[in-house]
Image (tube, rainbow, N blue to C red; front, side, top):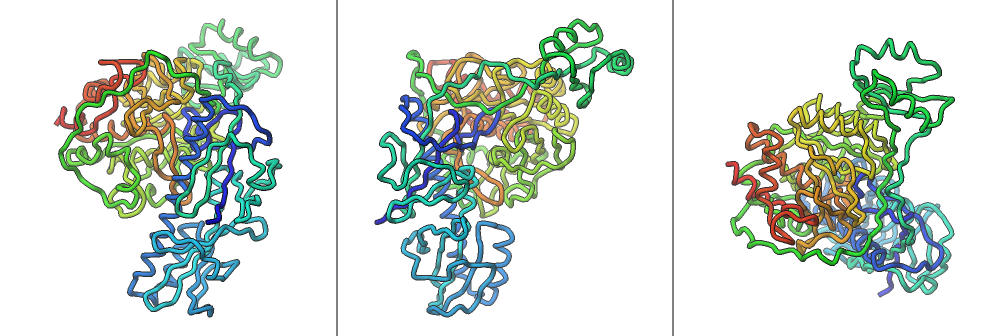
Length: 605
């Protein structure tokens, strides 16, 4: 069978689709030469190829299932109306037609190629064509036989594939020749025969596509402090002193203020000079650079020799609730591993608000929109929390997607509400000021739990101030440990007021990228995790960014069952009931072990 090849690359060593901790990374760059790869880069590339292949399979399964529902429908007259609804809700459907032999009886939307003879692949009884390009855009046909012998033909806009690989997906046709789906850099290969041999590949079994990934081996400068030049974040000891203090300043511009912080800028002083002067000011409690929270580069060092393999305790055998979400049983191994089904018999997360501080959340996603509260954009202080990156939507879905609603995935905390707080922009970047501001806002607007799948390698006083404020207001704070396989502590994961989460795989061993250290509290699934993506799509991602919202969801279940428990008591419940892995007791790789939802809830029932 002829194979189509999808090629992606990654920029620096940031792992695309691998959700990074501070900044979700999904950013790519095609490498045009054969760069020697370390063992760690090879493992990283393989993991990403697997995630991309699984995501493509999810995409095809979703399309195929919808087509089959229409084919089995007894109300054929309603199909044109349903076609229109589907195009409005799912932009990856470009158009539909009903064919009787070769005659077109119904056409909805726009179809570039009405040719059922191109349907040469079969999956789940649906037939698919190879990808083709029209005016620089990629499409694919799929078809399903109706009971009366006619054919429903749908044209798929493959822009979604471009989105989850950030516009650098390349497809080789049946002859092995590459054509470009989105951006058009010079990849340096004319055909698949020209590709370097040391690439990691994964097959998409439904269509025989091959996902191929290549990264370079640059090392991240993750310990280097990066900040906005000529700026400082300040906080007053006494807020009432602010007006008089500013009146006495010369050549100091207030760029932003959001109680209790200000961002000030000096047109005449360097950052170092400005910070040095401000730290001598009696009225200021905090004066520090406005740190840039950049994406967490995924550099993998060798696994420490002393690390021990997981030692799982015996599985819980009790039967649990089984939601009817379409991807739950075939794909969501992660929820079974932490005994979510058994726990759902005890709590659904009612009357609990989980704030997701991230790149925003898709407000129109069918698996989220009915449980989203009005959110906050820390960049412009509006309520626009739309997510053009995808990381925040994915994180929110893991914690609390709509569950038992037939479509999509199940979330950990079924009935909890999501409070979206956008502190990272469309590139997955923010600053210590935005994150601190977002924490304050979330606390003041009713957050019971805050998930922060974000962080970086420098200690910000403003960030810690906000963390302390949230902790003192009895908010449960969940953070990700990081994706660099290093012991260097990330912030806010290093702070004592938060619960820090490392990642494990489906064998309950530490994910090879997961940061470690004595500050790690627990572990949760973090490899090949399916969840939501903007525009009613679904992707598979890996990273400690994915592990953390599992724990945020568990915190939501606990707070619903026992609202009288303090945040510290919730931490104690989660850590004391975790499945001990690795070295007996607390260790730097798993903390107290992998979370166990049913054990945690039973302990407080």
